[in-house]
Image (cartoon, rainbow, N blue to C red):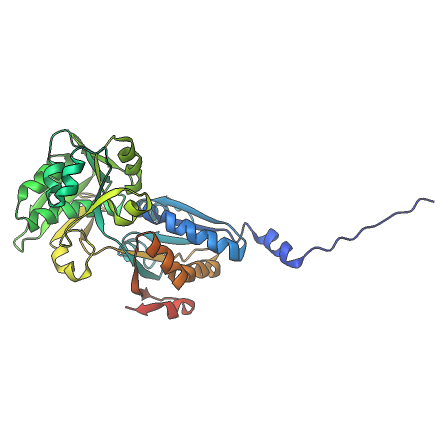
Length: 339
């Protein structure tokens, strides 16, 4: 009579847990393009500790938000380059809280192949004169999709105020884009109206998000681009620092920055008036997150000393104290100062 041999294999309960739940525990993050590299770094740290995947989908911040509110795409965490966009678009339907956590500034990036690069390096205060020269090609991101784009417009308009020279605004912006106009109100505030169908021409190039301009710059297709300082550092690009009165990097100058208001998607029911203000990034976990506790753990890492070190390394200095708005979860209260 043949024998039947039964072999029992013990399986680690921990292994079963992570195997069974790995898909459930995968986090999805919609983020600003300028946050992709530091978030990738944090994701590596997080995955090593928690043994699950983190999916990061970069785009312009406004485009990231529209994936949620217009396209009904699901994500757990949203991280944007302008924290004000969260209350503007997502509170209270999509989230009831958000945290402002890191800073940046606008710079002008270029390469050694850029036209007049040597002159700019010697005389950085002549940046707007160099951009006005024939055959010099420059770019910024789409202001209707990406905060870096409406901030680039803000920088140009602020320069026209700082130098008391309206030709800067006309030469670098108004004469280069169909579908954009401006008005100056009695309080000397400049309002720039950006239609949903802008069309750049001449030597100005616009792309959906700021990081899209890097390949054009490196290939020599454009000479200069308005970018975040962090992007210049991360991609090892040459750049000049713009005056603090226009680079949106100094909170003490917010009153001056607010002399420019950019109206995105002007003339539509989605028009938003965005006063210029010092750059601050924001993050939130969405109400409909399927992995809420896990998402909070990721935000903890982002706000921790280890997370702050990552953002500092990649050119996005963290706020001295992150600022929490709304119903910040108890798990995060020790990391933030309530507004």
